[in-house]
Length: 256
Ligand code: ADP
Ligand code: MG
Image (cartoon, rainbow, N blue to C red; front, side, top):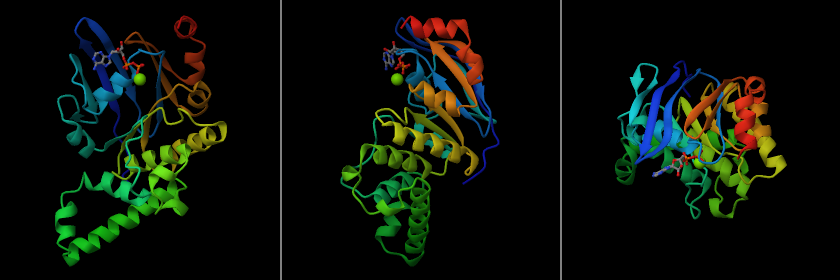
């Protein structure tokens, strides 16, 4: 996996849906190698922000840059090729396929040789296929799924399915990982394991993580920085201690 050395800059981003301002002149920057949380009450604009970062939504105004590359205006697959991967809140896996098969699907979407030459069983393609398989197995082991490599995803526990979803995103070898509510619906033990995993993704793999999460204990326990959105506006940005003490943040959470 490639070490990330490029900051992500969200510069004055506005997203309008008709008269509604889902994001209003939002700016913040994400330091390479950080876990950066984006939090806020329901409807604050968190999912909209992820959809902008991954190229699903176009901005009405503003720009997102990843190092020197401008991400806004690019298609999702182009952004993925620049090293931005997203693990979805609602798991985007095929339940009838095994862990390895799901990870291979995620990986192949970004490689050009892919299934056509592998289907022809050219020796070179077969070797490449082996290399990719070995790599996705490594990634599954990193997510502590090593003893479930050939199990259909649909029979795994919910907590393990969430881990496969993170592994699927990692199988594209990203520099920047967008995690959309990775512990939603998890019990305390699964949540603690996932929190530990996110820190390992940062520390052992050197990948920058942007985390949208409702579990405040988890967020405040692992985030290096936190950006708080409310009604599409950035109302705070700082360390967990700073934002937790911010009167506007307290008001936004008490009022919702
Ligand atoms: P959050 O994820 O923080 O709960 P969202 O980003 O999903 O908030 O939504 C922010 C606001 O934008 C909400 O009012 C939501 O209804 C609106 N919104 C989000 N996506 C769309 C869309 N595709 N079309 C119209 N309105 C949208
Ligand atoms: Mg949301």
